[in-house]
Image 1 (cartoon, rainbow over the protein chains, first blue to last red):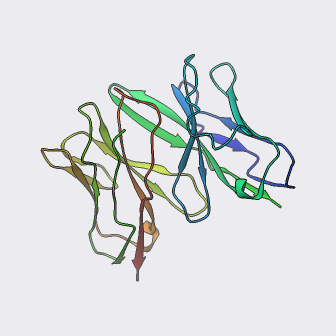
Image 2: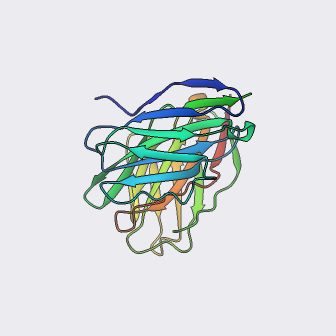
Length: 115
Length: 111
């Protein structure tokens, strides 16, 4: 079946502009995560959505970052007034719970470049 | 959340067995251990998951000792295409939430 999709795959923007990154999770998955990965680095947790619960925003690096998940499905990560340090690959993952185990399925990511 | 510690990098040669060990000393009772593989310019991909003892699938084996404070991912007869970053992740349905990835282990397979 279809996996997690993200759009755009690449985004180049100018410093100070706002950007929106989209994630379409796998249908039926219980949770959705956003991570950021800078070049050569590990995955940095940003935000987590689980059902109708309030999202865990504890990983968002500043108030310029926000995310929403509409209808328990599609999610949008918005970065306002982008800075050069925001340049990274932004990865989305949806989570499947089977019994007692949780497995994340990742999208291909959006590569953001802030000039 | 259980913190994980892995070697930063490992080198191997084609055809060898590779074992990557992850330490997770404060693993909780409900936590499972999951390993992901990430190729350049791709998102991480699930490899294997286990709770205790040994788990084997078509890709790898996962060895977990009785105290569960560590785990070892075993890749049999690696090939060049196994060159990737391998992440160990500890968490579970009992405390699903902010799943934290460590820095991972960069495995370089040489011909």
